[in-house]
Amino acid sequence: MEMLTGNYAVAYGVKLARAEIIAAYPITPQTSIVEKLSEFIEKGEMRAEYIRVESEHSAMAACIGAASAGARAFTATSSHGLLYMAEMVFWAGYSRLPIVMAVVTRTLAPPWNIWSEHTDIFSLRDTGWIIFMCEDNQEVLDTVIQAYKIAEDPRVQLPVMLGLDAFTLSHVASPVELPSQEEVDGFLPPPGATPRSFIMDVEHPVSHSSIVDPDTTFHFRYLMKEAMEKARKVVREVDEAYRRLTGRCYGGLAEEYRCGDAELILAVAGAAAGDAKEAADKLREEGIRAGVLKLRALRPFPVEEVRKAASTAKVLLTFDRDYSFGSGGVIAREVKASLCGFPRQPLVDSYIVGLGGSEITPQHFIEAAHRSLEKVEKGLLEPEEVWLLPPEVKPGGVPW
Image (cartoon, rainbow, N blue to C red; front, side, top):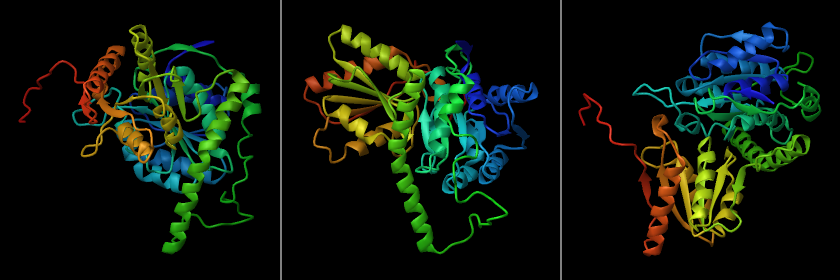
């Protein structure tokens, strides 16, 4: 057992996975990930090439080149760094390259802000990447290891990004159990062992990303769709295999907490899931049968798990640490889309919380639960979007 920050948990996971190429560019609050990896390499504890690039765009480009040649590649970023590499994030996803990237979720500016928000990682949900959100530092380390097995599976061959909340996880240390190198070596295939038809090979040359006709492009998109659908099964299989190895698992795409008899479900992603679980326990002490659906995956979205939770609940509350202006919370929209046409329709209220890194506490979930349950008791079944704003702040010089 080690005391590790979330960022160090990422680095140890990458080391145990025997990543071969690290493309690094610093940005707060992810910098200590690539710093720790450089330390491992400098001390000879990790055999990998460390590429110090001049931008996040170049970091992902380097990973694309490495993965195209069959190497196991890794990078990390946050916020505006993720947006700067957005072109290459699409390129990696559409190229079906099994890259793993850690995204320490951080608010997008303006106003300038370094604290956690999920809008950065959620804004790239349509890039063809599998996307995980982690609750704690143990899950961070375990998800890094699982990510390589999922990404490199011949049924999938898609890149994976995992999100961890800035500072709440990235810079706070907690106990983390490290699997042995031998255990991870037995769990993952050796780097480069998974057959991929598109790997650059001078003996068997292929063209990469050349221009093709519209019908061929359409076909490629269909194959990506099929791979993402197959990833649902692969994620569950890998999570179960990891449970057999370490005793730890995370529900595959989503984790249920006290949902079996729940009349009220709190749906949430990221570090706030821990607060939601505490809130559910307190609500049960009040006689309210509450449960938590932790959405571990944003892509592929856990449609079946959402429907299962909705089949018993009369109220399902979504909590978004993000916002899509003109549409709403991303989790809220995904949950509602999952329930479209489903015969059992609970009330779905959307709560916006924690934007800009504003603190999320168990009390936020408890207040939301009471508010929505009171609506149901009064027969008010119209879904609502509610912003749980912090105490009023009046910024100086704002003209609106």
